[in-house]
Amino acid sequence: MPDTQAREHCQKYADRLGSVYVSDCQDDRFYFSGHSSVSGEPILLRDFPASQADAPRVLVVGGIHGDELSSISIVFAWMRELKTLTPQPFHWRITPSMNPDGLLRPDAQRTNANGVDLNRNFPTPNWEEESRKYWVDRTHRNPRRYPGPEPLSEPESRWLFAEIEKFQPHVIVAVHAPYGIVDFDGPSIPPKKLGHLYLNLLGTYPGSLGNYAGVVRGIPVVTVELASAGSMPSARQQDKIWQDLLTWLDEKINQPTQHAAKDTP
Image (cartoon, rainbow, N blue to C red):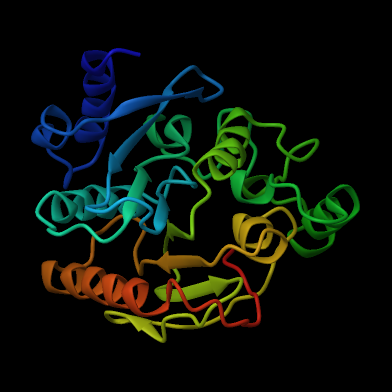
């Protein structure tokens, strides 16, 4: 996909989200990941290379659930900060929205266009049995949490699975809402807080990104759970979340201390 087409698609985010601006798309070097959503919407990426070779790699994923609008908007805010960060200690790879179909519907929805919760569609152990049992027994067949017919049945989850294999991140940062906490899965010591959001381990779930990447793959997964799906934190809160995240990454990314793994709903 040419950069001009990526910018045209990126402008859809500006049209959809009040705190995302046209300039966020015009001067950023978004590119097509090579993967599209069920409805053919491209999954876009933006790289911020490190100042030095062989720097740790950080993968940031926003908008796994399309109705968590703030989880997309804050990623654009972080990208504005990254454009001014020098020297750049990490190689960042960022997608503001993993689930563009859910976001761009007239009424945004959690699931993708096939009605699958992408955060239940990753290949965790005993997925076939555990994911359906959880969906039936614990959620009472809640359609918002339908895990899909099989692991990686969806193009969006297949993209992230492939991207993790390709990029080999040292840390994954996933953004959600509206629990208002920090969750964590995998090795290393989690941040006790990011700004006004405090660590609160919510549990592991069959097919979730935290379960797959954090528990199965052993990649630290920091989940930033914003307090509101529809409203952004204040500018001061956003800045503190960002600064605390940078501090934690700087202190802990090379310290793979084992830690109990939990995950976000």
